[in-house]
Length: 446
Length: 87
Image (cartoon, rainbow over all chains, first blue to last red; front, top):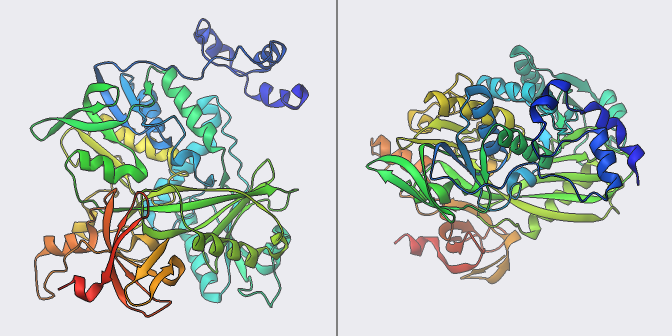
């Protein structure tokens, strides 16, 4: 029994006295030193589930399609911020089986454009209090995200972006070569490197979070407030009264609702086709991610490569968690191909040649809803009674709290919050794109 | 993923460059039809199933190809020269 390793965490996240009283009598999971001790002594067979497994009711006020991070946080904030608790979250598989458990866990808000900085900075503030808010340890670790620069032009771009972030109240530090070398000792800082490092842009408040815990914490928080989380409940069609969406048909029967919200990321195309929306400014692509065998502590931040596209961090277990570019072709398959694997590995070795003999432990793929300008869509519509949340490209995880927070506001009030007012579906036809990198309507480059 | 180039035969994915969705119709360049241009530039059918798309055999004969490929299984259903598919 490695119980002594656990008790400090137990003490920190003990349930406050005030909440304990409310929860006396519930049979849902609580985590404290006492519960750890009690369950350790009884063979860990008496843990209670963190959320219920209810049967669908015939009607709800709001249905949220998609039990990923964004769907669960939407339900949580609907209940917490707007008092709407008659809510169902429909998940086609099991909770955490989609992108919320497939990302590389990076949380940051280092954007250039005001709409994005404000939105992601709001997300960062929610992250900073998330473990306390949910009373669930999401292991948010503000270890910093360091974007490397390899050319003078890249240093200029980093300075510009850093200033834009600070202008909007974020945090950013421009580092020179020596500071980067001190901060990341494993990095190839030699002048003979293929892309010699000149410096970097550090966001100290950025970092990583335990992605499963984020899903479980939001699920428990929403469930506690009365939200029904319906797993293995795939939407097979929409119920319509004229134009208006009034519910869904699912593998677990028909469910009606006053409002139907769609937050299904990579499956957006598939689900919206069921509602008769055949064209969207979205393409689905696969992004692969990788974990190496465990190593002793080597990389203390999230480090991204500026000579290509690679991001790496080291998990608490010691594995290097990293990823790179999309495979680059439309797909709904949650797996990629080998040429991209080779490219990602070569980029990692260009940064850290000392990792050449480290073995890869596992790799996987997730389906990304790539929008035409690289920015998300959080909006009422496109049909009456419907709300749409999509276009997360491969940056959806860090947005989880703010996405749910803004989407909940949009659903509850029927109109966007100022933070997501720019993330409309019609911005493409109106010519007011939010194209962070100015790359145009080629989703594989975003 | 192997793509059978009509000129070179079956070749590895790494020889090809993806050129995107081939389901779109480019309006007449002189057209002022905003909705047609919007549809061409920004709208995608993004199907879960057979997808018609352009590839270029950039690491080989450099021919532009029109390919039908399943986005669920990555199976290549047909490959043709893009200029012939455009006729």
